[in-house]
Amino acid sequence: MVKAKKTIEKKEKEFKLEDIFNFSIAGDAKPSMQKQKPYYTKVLKGEKRLAHRVVLMNPKDFLDHCFRVYNLDTIIKNPDVYKQPYKFALPWINILERKSVGQGRAYVCWKAKLKKIPILLVARFDEEIDSYLKGNKIKSKEYKCLN
Image 1 (cartoon, rainbow, N blue to C red):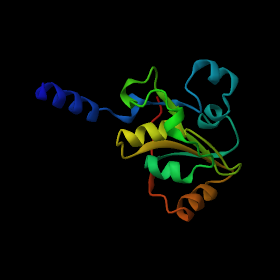
Image 2: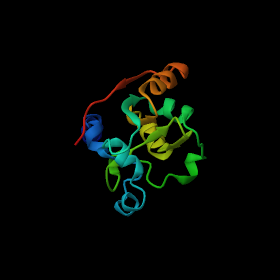
Image 3: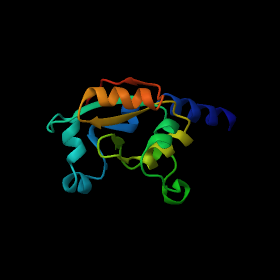
Image 4: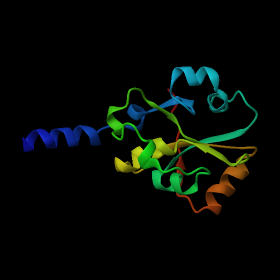
């Protein structure tokens, strides 16, 4: 029994971000929502005239610096990051409009003790993204991987 538990823990630690996140969509991962609200997926693909960057950020930093805060314990239906029905879409922060989405995903990843998650940052100019990261003292690094 102990050996089986160690094997499961080892498998969970071997997950890569690409196993959990879909780097080609942002916002909501549900196909019906992507049809209704594809705006941030279009930003991610460069179809909107906005500066954007995918950065790796600590989930706790994302939760601390997002613009909407919920009681996440009450809204999370499936707290196991490794057993989600589909890959997560990228959470995002729109610095210009002071909006953000993905707090639930970040919370689940934080509870799973993931050290970094990908976040789509959106602004008018790259300088605004740099200023936002520096001003909030967020440690992050740019992530370059699109499926």
